[in-house]
Length: 405
Image (cartoon, rainbow, N blue to C red; front, side, top):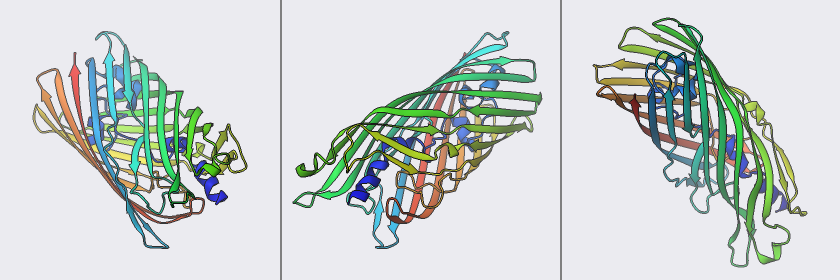
């Protein structure tokens, strides 16, 4: 019983900042093209995709968009054949950008607010993994003021300071129960602020071809005053006391090499290759203020690995008003066998995307995108005593409005 309690406590909210909760929905044009956008400058989302390319944007603009994400997972236990599903509510990640600067000036400024990590997960009552997770709410908001400078007609550089804020609430059952057979419960909440940067180089050797090199820094998230609330039988209150805890984890750096080619004024292609530094998530450690023999500080290995993502897409202007987009991405999971958890049963993913854009006059444009993911992962997590197969479907619909001035 004590061992299972220790394992539950080891899986605190900060874990959820670092698993496969990377939300790649930072621009509707780019999303419709497989998430590739570092070398094809189209709108203010360049603040996120490549600060070096902002100085090549022809107009000042304001861009606001959001997504509706429906994610459902199912789990089949290998030992009991029990079956469970998630009952997760709708998630709504957003992105907003502004870019401005005089037409004749080589210096431009940008500001972005976006949600690069987040999830809402809720498993049905009484499921096999309830001692690992019953529900999760996670949101991060990054704010990024940015400066971009055009060194010459072919080369631009840029960088942005990133302020990151995160909120999380995680609930689980404990393998303890009262006289009526009701399981004990735990509710863990935490908030944190952190800092980082986003930098990029944009190179356009000719009008049809462009290249990009970008780096988004590792961000160290530290929860200093998280609150752990344990609802246990009264006789165990002293053994499992509620109270504050602290923890830390690092969000991975992302190194991107990008290229874009415009066949003509109507047809363009884009490619991004991401190298993601997930290896920074090596150990999960927690410091509880109110330690007891049943509530010690913990250190557990996570042993994530660095990995790649490949994003490719195309867009075609049907006429002066309508543009169609399509793309795909391949994302390799950083989670090794034996470490998969129900917060996100990550796996290698093949994502399919499509999008449409409609130009309204000379100043407005509306863009929409759709993303579909379908992946499966079989794993035996010894720490959580979960041996089974997860299957996940994710559907994301997005819409943005762009205003040029």
